[in-house]
Picture (tube, helix red, strand yellow):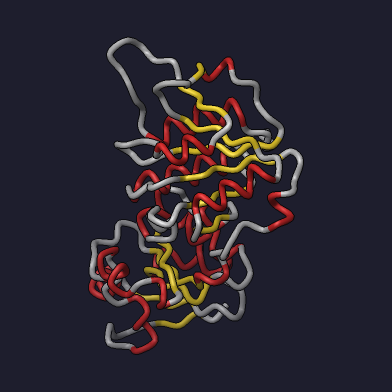
Length: 270
């Protein structure tokens, strides 16, 4: 592993890591082509996937745990924790950061062979703008064997540092794409025999346990406050509600998705 000791925070090799708080990353935008991973579990997943990691920056005490995982082409920069905080621009609680290539993870669309699987489970996210919820949805997707995630155009980025941390890196493992034509993509899935089931309440909703699990299913979850939009509900084959005690009318979208995926996912769970 190419371990490089850093003795000054002005070292130009660390330019990728300067001021990488989420709001600064948003200003840079996806055009930069990079994302940052934080904490050991996330960085481990990055390093296990060939071609994903550009470099690693760690505090000295983490070298034995992270260094051996890095392939020869990935430089491992080592410095002290205080210097890492100054470089990154935020309080790093765990001295492990890594830069990754977005192009190695993001997909322009869900692969045709993925949509053709039988059985198949897809998670379709509409308008999820909360950072933590996006991360939780990807963690759920991994736990329940989801084959792929489709994000509507307005969903938050699962590769933002905090989202990736909440997902404990599972956004790197579960195939995902961002839709450019949400209504059209839903129609194409229906045309290919994928049963679309919306997690929602209201008119026409059926108790979750009364909906037979299809072999090819796309579970649709909606925005945190407004839920699944009327247009998307109209495109779905079924609407399933989670029975709840009187006085409680909703759940966090991550919790609701987990309950529904436990019912509908055909993915392997061991």
